[in-house]
Length: 409
Length: 105
Image (cartoon, rainbow over all chains, first blue to last red; front, side, top):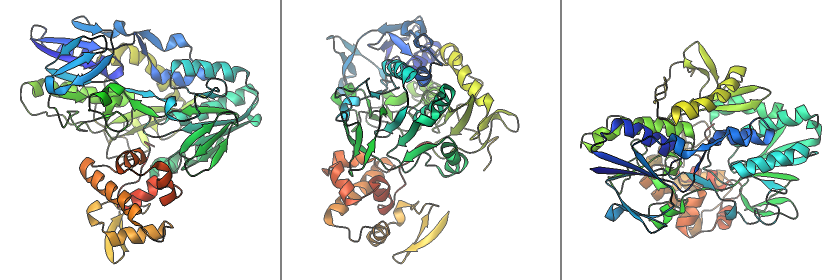
């Protein structure tokens, strides 16, 4: 009996066990998944909670509901991986041996890594929206907020869902407009990148959006610390950005267990082949989802296309054959732009987001790099698709690899 | 893709002036681009940063983030901002003949 051990039952880990339980012979393969948390969060939904569009109940379900029969779910934390011994030590003292290991331990926000963020003003004048607690607390704050200077600050890249901070600002513009206080709110985006849009074609197509919505960008701003009492962000080169309400996107880091295992990089992400997800150091370790140090977005859509490729390859790999599918870095994301509209981007390692339509050339129905109402509906429709199709590892009628069909160059 | 001549060498650059083939880079090019970026002279500490980025990009296939530079070169983020003022990640990448740090859109 061979043992496939999966660390993490988030988006990537849950899809992996569902796909592989169907593919691997039950008489020959045991599958175990380890995760300390009982709740599965629909993380893309956090964005909507501060604006009262979604409630907590819309984004939580028990993890166990998505783990298929024939897969053992162990509720425990990982202390460390011991790759030389093909085993994982849990913090409760248990040891789990494996033949193949899939690391899918994700990324977490770490406000503790920026001095000042947690200094007494956390959830008073400083919030995040990448956690359920943060999104709910921010929703309570915004409901009665009378206006002022709202700053969204990305501490450092990479972050989960890199477009979410922009979506937050565009939804905030809509929200305050509806509340009738938009003229009393300043919206500011302080980013360590050189602008809100860094890819040439996206910048050209979307650059006007923020200007039209009167959202100001402070580029090249790398926060060093927060003066919580004085309500100021201070950068490494001593620029200051003052705020009344700070929405921070804290530093994202991989699981500390990866550092303890000697597998992580400086942010605890695990280096891996970007086309096959095999560890360059250990031939029986794969890394999927946000935990992987690959140059694509940390996003569920990437995890989904990546798991499609990985699952196609795994049977060949364990049989000693060559892996025939190579992941191309494919991501596609709906971007909320407010007032009931949205955008869609579709790209991969080599191809930047381009205009056109998706998935059918000339038909769409979704428009790429262009606002439309149907993109907004697509984003809302995605929640039931996530719970009912994606997590359960069912195939979507969309190819895992990016297609140039429908795109305009 | 266009080409331009920097310090007597013709190299490929993208629309934003970043070199696209790290193999075409040399130290004279770095010195010249540094001047364009408002850094009149590359000191030994500047070179430590550039050398680290070149070696790291060769090993990993991508230009290192600021955090990766500071974690591995022994030079603090504050110092990097003093050495390469206003957008050091971008400046270091350009001087080192590597790609620009960017988001997904």
